Length: 271
Image (cartoon, rainbow, N blue to C red; front, side, top):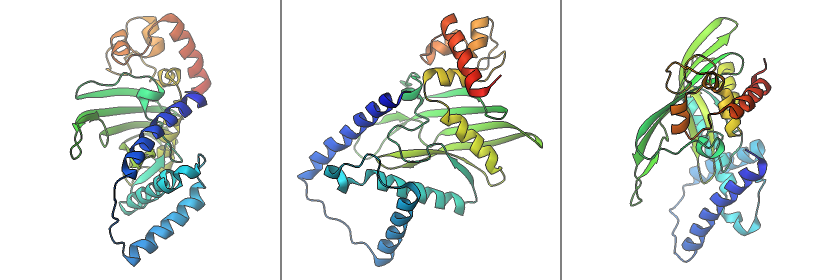
């Protein structure tokens, strides 16, 4: 995805929040009392967030009180603290807060958005050798009086087979989020998983910046990278996806795309 296209989505997302802010402006909002201990803790977190992530790159004095960037940075630090307390291995996919997360496949890669509860699978080639199987469980979610919406939040699972100097390692994990108005995605694994594997998985996801990138990283094999059924024609084998799955995910399936994706695969993975 081009930088300009990302900015377009960021502007689109921000406009929704700014419209909501205008609606709130006329309401009387009474803040709950804050203890001295919590105020001190929040101040420490805010200082660390500024040191680690720097100031808001899209700072607008008109919306300085919204603290979108600052709140997201602080949420990332809080999530890190939680994962460390649980002795988990993690690596950020989005290394700083963003309006469009790196794993927003529907936006970045143009995948079809599911219209009903379902489970979606696909396999990607892993940087350094191996594969990552992504399983996303889309379920209806309801919050307070809002209309239910379809999401795979907290239901994105990873099965990784990584080639290492010690041999093939198979591990399971998940894609997790630090959520504020802005957000960031990370990969999280149990304590026994080496940090190097987590970093490779996160780096693999960061490579996806367009539809061609996504298709280039689909696992190369004689079976579909989504459903696992045998691939019968050469175009499907070059694209690593069968025509039925390509149609369901709204991905092109033709010779021109196969040639373009093959070239992009060589750029991303070598060979």
